[in-house]
Length: 148
Image (cartoon, rainbow, N blue to C red; front, side, top):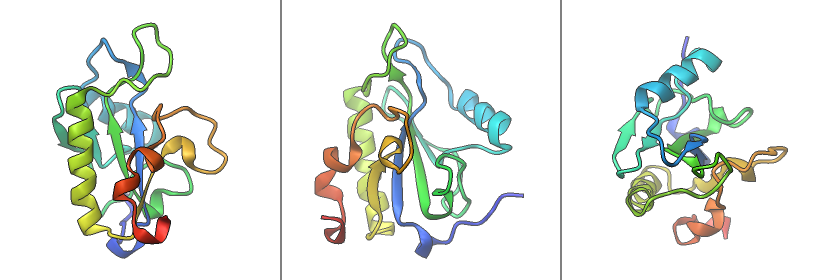
Protein backbone atom coordinates (compact mmCIF):
# COMPACT_ATOMS: atom_id res chain seq x y z
CA UNK A 1 0.00 0.00 0.00
CA UNK A 2 1.44 3.33 -1.04
CA UNK A 3 1.32 6.07 1.58
CA UNK A 4 -0.03 9.51 0.79
CA UNK A 5 2.15 12.60 0.79
CA UNK A 6 0.30 15.76 1.73
CA UNK A 7 1.23 18.90 -0.18
CA UNK A 8 1.56 20.96 3.01
CA UNK A 9 4.01 18.42 4.47
CA UNK A 10 6.59 18.86 1.67
CA UNK A 11 9.56 20.69 3.21
CA UNK A 12 12.39 19.29 1.04
CA UNK A 13 13.14 18.78 -2.63
CA UNK A 14 15.84 16.11 -2.47
CA UNK A 15 18.17 15.60 -5.43
CA UNK A 16 19.65 12.16 -6.17
CA UNK A 17 21.64 10.46 -8.91
CA UNK A 18 20.92 6.99 -10.24
CA UNK A 19 24.54 6.00 -9.41
CA UNK A 20 24.99 4.63 -12.90
CA UNK A 21 27.80 5.25 -15.38
CA UNK A 22 27.51 8.35 -17.51
CA UNK A 23 28.47 6.41 -20.65
CA UNK A 24 25.58 3.94 -20.29
CA UNK A 25 21.86 4.59 -20.49
CA UNK A 26 19.71 3.66 -17.50
CA UNK A 27 16.07 3.60 -18.55
CA UNK A 28 13.14 4.82 -16.46
CA UNK A 29 11.90 1.23 -16.49
CA UNK A 30 15.18 0.08 -14.95
CA UNK A 31 14.95 2.81 -12.31
CA UNK A 32 11.39 1.78 -11.47
CA UNK A 33 12.34 -1.91 -11.33
CA UNK A 34 15.22 -1.13 -8.96
CA UNK A 35 12.88 0.77 -6.62
CA UNK A 36 10.28 -1.97 -6.77
CA UNK A 37 12.90 -4.63 -5.95
CA UNK A 38 14.40 -2.69 -3.03
CA UNK A 39 11.37 -0.93 -1.56
CA UNK A 40 8.26 -2.47 -3.10
CA UNK A 41 7.56 0.71 -5.06
CA UNK A 42 9.30 3.23 -7.30
CA UNK A 43 11.70 5.44 -5.33
CA UNK A 44 11.49 8.87 -7.00
CA UNK A 45 8.90 11.33 -8.19
CA UNK A 46 10.96 12.56 -11.16
CA UNK A 47 13.78 11.20 -13.29
CA UNK A 48 15.91 13.40 -15.53
CA UNK A 49 17.43 11.57 -18.48
CA UNK A 50 20.81 12.49 -20.01
CA UNK A 51 19.05 14.23 -22.89
CA UNK A 52 17.10 16.43 -20.44
CA UNK A 53 13.81 14.54 -20.69
CA UNK A 54 11.92 14.73 -17.40
CA UNK A 55 10.04 11.51 -16.66
CA UNK A 56 7.33 11.59 -14.01
CA UNK A 57 7.63 8.37 -11.99
CA UNK A 58 5.44 8.82 -8.89
CA UNK A 59 2.56 11.24 -8.43
CA UNK A 60 3.54 14.00 -6.01
CA UNK A 61 0.80 12.93 -3.58
CA UNK A 62 2.44 9.50 -3.05
CA UNK A 63 5.44 9.12 -0.72
CA UNK A 64 8.65 8.15 -2.41
CA UNK A 65 11.23 5.69 -1.10
CA UNK A 66 14.37 7.73 -1.63
CA UNK A 67 15.50 9.17 1.71
CA UNK A 68 14.92 7.21 4.90
CA UNK A 69 13.17 9.29 7.57
CA UNK A 70 12.49 12.08 5.03
CA UNK A 71 10.10 10.46 2.56
CA UNK A 72 7.13 11.79 4.54
CA UNK A 73 8.17 15.39 3.85
CA UNK A 74 9.95 15.39 0.49
CA UNK A 75 9.81 15.11 -3.26
CA UNK A 76 12.57 12.93 -4.77
CA UNK A 77 14.28 13.97 -7.99
CA UNK A 78 16.87 11.69 -9.59
CA UNK A 79 19.16 12.36 -12.53
CA UNK A 80 20.56 9.63 -14.78
CA UNK A 81 24.25 9.15 -14.03
CA UNK A 82 26.41 10.11 -11.09
CA UNK A 83 29.32 7.82 -11.91
CA UNK A 84 32.07 8.59 -14.40
CA UNK A 85 33.04 6.12 -17.15
CA UNK A 86 35.26 4.23 -14.66
CA UNK A 87 32.48 3.91 -12.08
CA UNK A 88 33.65 6.64 -9.68
CA UNK A 89 31.23 9.17 -8.15
CA UNK A 90 31.15 12.37 -10.21
CA UNK A 91 28.79 15.17 -11.18
CA UNK A 92 28.00 13.81 -14.63
CA UNK A 93 24.99 16.03 -15.36
CA UNK A 94 24.82 17.07 -18.99
CA UNK A 95 23.93 20.65 -19.92
CA UNK A 96 20.49 19.34 -20.90
CA UNK A 97 20.07 17.75 -17.45
CA UNK A 98 21.18 20.94 -15.68
CA UNK A 99 18.68 23.00 -17.67
CA UNK A 100 15.85 20.50 -17.14
CA UNK A 101 16.58 20.21 -13.41
CA UNK A 102 16.60 23.97 -12.97
CA UNK A 103 13.26 24.30 -14.79
CA UNK A 104 11.73 21.43 -12.80
CA UNK A 105 12.89 22.99 -9.53
CA UNK A 106 11.45 26.36 -10.57
CA UNK A 107 8.08 24.67 -11.18
CA UNK A 108 8.21 22.73 -7.91
CA UNK A 109 9.09 25.89 -5.99
CA UNK A 110 5.77 27.38 -7.14
CA UNK A 111 3.95 24.38 -5.69
CA UNK A 112 6.11 24.14 -2.56
CA UNK A 113 7.44 27.66 -1.88
CA UNK A 114 8.88 26.83 1.55
CA UNK A 115 10.64 23.62 0.48
CA UNK A 116 14.45 23.66 0.65
CA UNK A 117 16.49 22.13 -2.14
CA UNK A 118 19.15 19.72 -0.91
CA UNK A 119 21.13 16.70 -2.04
CA UNK A 120 20.80 13.24 -0.55
CA UNK A 121 24.35 13.62 0.79
CA UNK A 122 23.30 16.74 2.73
CA UNK A 123 20.86 14.87 4.97
CA UNK A 124 22.05 14.11 8.51
CA UNK A 125 23.84 10.78 8.91
CA UNK A 126 24.04 10.11 5.16
CA UNK A 127 27.49 8.95 4.07
CA UNK A 128 26.84 8.75 0.33
CA UNK A 129 28.19 11.13 -2.30
CA UNK A 130 24.80 11.14 -4.06
CA UNK A 131 24.06 13.30 -6.06
CA UNK A 132 27.78 14.12 -6.47
CA UNK A 133 27.32 17.89 -6.13
CA UNK A 134 25.86 20.16 -3.43
CA UNK A 135 22.36 21.26 -4.52
CA UNK A 136 21.77 23.58 -1.56
CA UNK A 137 24.51 25.89 -2.82
CA UNK A 138 24.23 25.12 -6.56
CA UNK A 139 20.56 26.16 -6.45
CA UNK A 140 20.96 28.90 -3.83
CA UNK A 141 18.97 31.33 -5.97
CA UNK A 142 15.94 29.02 -5.77
CA UNK A 143 16.05 28.48 -2.01
CA UNK A 144 13.17 29.91 0.04
CA UNK A 145 14.02 33.15 1.82
CA UNK A 146 13.49 31.37 5.16
CA UNK A 147 16.32 28.92 4.31
CA UNK A 148 18.94 31.59 3.69
